[in-house]
Image (tube, rainbow, N blue to C red; front, side, top):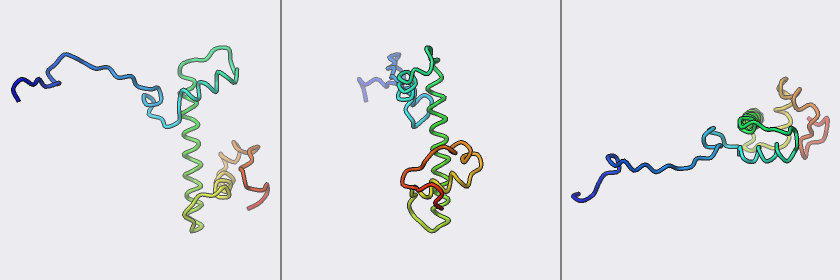
Length: 113
C-alpha cells in the first residue's frame, strides 16, 4: 500500500524487557528463588547466577520426580499421580532416595508401600 512503511526497513527498534526466567528458559521463577535466598540469610552476598542455578536445579528435580511418578502410575494402570506414586518413585530410585532420605511425602505413612 502506498504511504505505508514496512517495519523491516525502518530504523526504529522497540526494546522489550525480558524476565530472567524467560532468558534462562525456565518455568520456575528466578525472582522467587532470589527472594527466598535473600530472606533466608544464607549468605551476606548473592551472585546474579545463584538464583538462576537454583531455579534450574529445582525445576530439573521436580521434572525427574514427576517423570518417575508418572511411570509408576502408568505401570500400575492408574491415570493420576498420587502421593503414594511419588513416594514409590523416590524410593525406587537410588539417587533420589539418598537425596530425599529425610523427607516425608505428605499423606504417605512412613514404611507404607
